[in-house]
Amino acid sequence: MSSNATLEVQFSLRAKPGPRQEHELSPMPVGLLPQITRVLALAIHIDDLLRKGEVRDYSDAARLGLLCRERVSQIMRLTYLAPDIQIEILYFPPVPGGRYPISETAMRRIASMLSWADQRTEWARLKATHRLS
Image 1 (cartoon, helix red, strand yellow):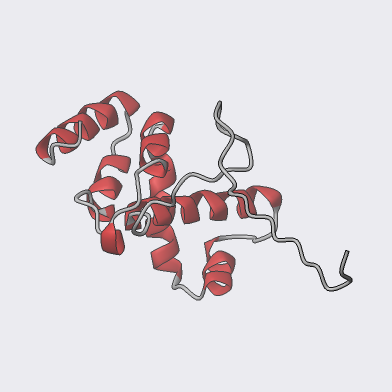
Image 2: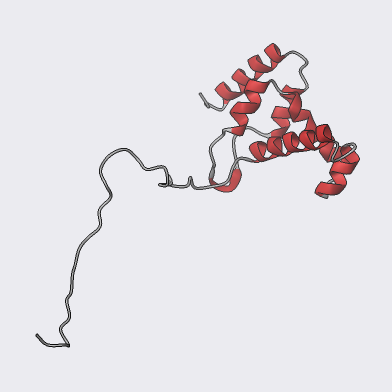
């Protein structure tokens, strides 16, 4: 036997058939979360900061977020939406450019309604207008 002998082994790897493994990632959706989703998430975050005492008021939150106090007030109005509406908005899928047919202004208008039942009625009407189920 020669001392310069080499051995070459070739094989191919295949995914094991069966249920999906935990470590496998699903493909990332293309696009950005809609603006209304991002703004509502910010409102919830600011509300959490207020509850924890990490900011004293909207002015503190505005300074922290480099916003004006009036804009923080607008954003915080979204927290008045019925919880089920908030959940729907938070789960909107990413869209190209982050543009979604439902605007923040329309959602603030709905949030200004005192009754959650009225909010839900208007929300259903708005979704039907835009053909969003």
